[in-house]
Length: 340
Ligand code: CP
Image (cartoon, rainbow, N blue to C red; front, top):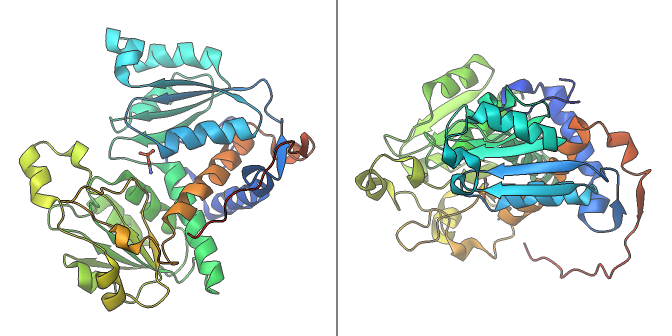
């Protein structure tokens, strides 16, 4: 993959060496994300951040990542506040927006919509999530987090043992993460989901074509023992066709301190792409784990900035200019120490 000027629509675009390059560049972004230095390398560049489906992390961290590289951000949220509500096609929208922007990040509720948009865009487009299909930047930040968490435990992504838990049918972050894992070696994957929310066959088939062990579980406790990473996901109720369907699955799988302590190996890393559903009836990842040092969910969100900075730097071809355009920060950078 060349990166420069390319759309980033699916993790299928990445070979192992591309993933490793993204991670190397992400590491180099640490001083800027940590407010030790500032860089103006993208001064004058504009990101259009187009989010037609609800988002906190992806939208804000794409914007912050671009700002941290010195660029400006223009944002639209929700269909109703864009001309798509007047019937404008994604293709016309892309022709217009790409005349205004150097790069575009986009989220949309329809699978394939971001690729359709990108097909008419003159600027590179990064997929911020298209329906139940893919969420490439989330998968990259998840895998980057896995790499870092495993490094503390003297392990690597090759030979990883991971349990992926929850709504594996509609969870786009899971779909992208599983496809990314496929290019590593000897990964053992437990797919733990209620009947009816299993991972799409095309993804489990893809994993089996590589040298991976793939096991299916419909009981939470059986699928989460003997893993390095416990990756929990929310039930994607917004993708269901009826309220009855949502009611059927809500609260079925709940990871909490008691389950974790009883069934997981000590030091199993707990991850979740967030948002977690903290409503009383749901709680797939209980807040009673919040003080557990193995809970990596907020390290994941911090890593999102590094990965998204890396993607912008690669796509806009400024990786080797970032430091050249940098200077010390001018404000008090003392930040509260983090427990998590
Ligand atoms: N993980 C994730 O996509 O979060 P948001 O929906 O808040 O962007």
